Image (cartoon, rainbow, N blue to C red):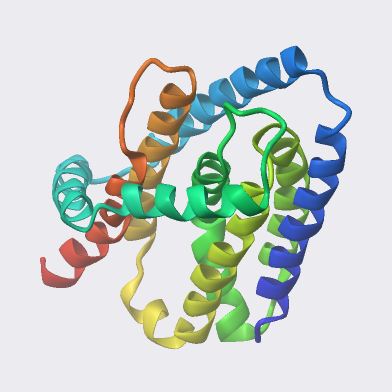
Length: 227
């Protein structure tokens, strides 16, 4: 049942490890250029993905409610505290890089999207792992690129991807009844807006606490359940 999820996670771990070795041979100015390229890529992914939304009011309310919940929990601060503690163990050659930044960006890019929902559902319901195996190939390549610029935080995101997709696979039968195409599209749109915000943060256009908006990804599910 979890074959596709495990392969997807391993692809992130292996790709991230390769990216770390590549990183050691990259001059600092090239590393900064790659960071800007990744930021622009995140903005592109965010803009194209958020167009998938079908219920504008649900998306807006999801962001507002999710932001309120995130501020109360203060997820952003907790993630950065965890990243700071890990940085003592895994220091970066570039002081401007942080484990939390790599973790947040790679988690959003690789955990958000229709494939991250449909793939585990298909694995859990039919044991057909085609979508997750395809995603594993994509994530493996993506993690090489991300880790070469963002460091070891990218590898840690594999744990989140495993837990997220594993939970969907485990509860696939129940979720298949609940999830609709419109709901998946709205969840994807909300997540894509967060990816866009992350790209703007990296370019230092904004200073949003993106992780505090993450609860918004789950809010469309509540609207469809109680509408």
